[in-house]
Amino acid sequence: MSEKETGRRDDLFYQQKNGYDCIDLDERLKLEAYCDGYKAYLDASRTEREAVREAIRQAEERGFVPYRRGMALEPGTKVYKDIRGKALILAVLGQETLEQGANIAAAHVDAPRLDLKQLPLYEDSELCYFKTHYYGGIKKYQWLAIPLELHGVVTKKDGETIDLVIGQDPEDPKFVITDLLPHLGKDQMAKTAAEVIPGEGLNLLIGSVPYADEGADRVKLAVMSLLNDRYGITEEDFLSAELEAVPSFPTSDIGLDRSLIGGYGHDDRVCAWAELAAIYQVDTPRRTAVCILTDKEEVGSMGVSGMQSQAFESFMADLCEAQDVRLRDCFANSFCVSADVCNGFDPNFPEVSEKRNGAKLNYGMGICKFTGSRGKSGSNDASAEVVGTLRRIFADNKVVWQMAELGKVDQGGGGTVALFMANRDIDTIDAGVPVLSMHAPYEIVSKFDCYMTYKGMLSFYKDR
Ligand code: MN
Ligand code: MN
Image (cartoon, rainbow, N blue to C red):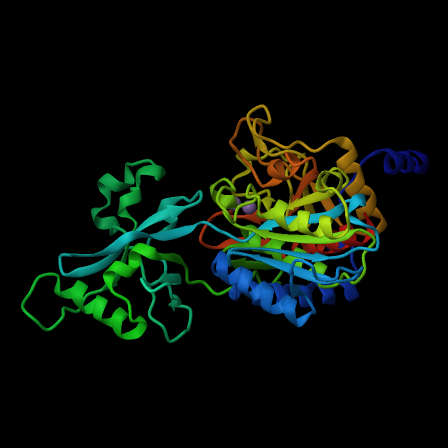
């Protein structure tokens, strides 16, 4: 082939490169440092409450203060709004007024898990258990025979709310849901994966030693005594508790080259961290930068701390009113990156992806123009102009990115908070980190993609 033909090909064809062919040693070092910060954040954030608490702790160290109505809002002012301890909005005021719109990034910090039921405690055959109700889209069989921790809060009758964390400290005991031995698994193995373990079978083993008396439920009594000694609670206190069983897996590097990260809850704390790390770097942006860590995405973004809640409008309206700007004008000129993970192409399961349009590990931040299912049903489907805006910003800032699609047409589907932002008259697009084993107790991401998602967020905050 002639030199002329090669040049023509380079000019006309879209060619993607492996991310590691696009960065130098200096950037590789930055990538590692960035991922060290992420791993620490993920380990500190087993639940949405912990993810919010840790973000507030860090933000305050960096000069963010709780928003108070009437406070002075100058360009560069850094404020945050804690939404009932389960969601968080941070903002850095821009040089321009909010009439020019804000640059908004929205990630979620809830993750699939097993919530304890409101009357969870029972004894069966002299073993003690907690009954659970799963939260979010899980493959139930993946939660058997793995170590689990308990995290959450108990609100007592007098109104006091206490934190309860058992299993995170290496010295702590863990909990587990048992599975059937293969020797007796003939009937179980013939079931479909959805039926292997019924929802009511997700019962957490929590004790086996009986209380030294003569009555009924002696193991349950012994367990309740331990909880009472340590936390001062009685069985009735579970009625007003939110306790979550989550995988007890520390975040780890994966692979001989340590290029991947394994952990629980990458979806979507990996994007939450990208937003946080980016907004920490923003001092006085042109447009106001807004970082949202929302809750309840995995169950439809409902609830007071979900993205459909008016809590977001209230906060933004407060900022707008301080500048004598109408909220609807602010929204109409705003742009939102719905920062959520996408599925990475998995060579073990090639049949569900369309190779030309699926996101690949190490190819950078994944932009998802649309999500939904079947004929894009339930999708935000960002416009060409919206995609073009990010394309320009990322090209100017050497952000390695790729188009992503949630599997083959008619293979399945899913959604994010994007449509709820777009419903507010805000231009919105999904973008985030490709994940393997999404929604499993242990998910995998590539360090390169994590870093590029951060770089994408930072360039968005600075350059739109
Ligand atoms: Mn997600
Ligand atoms: Mn999810």
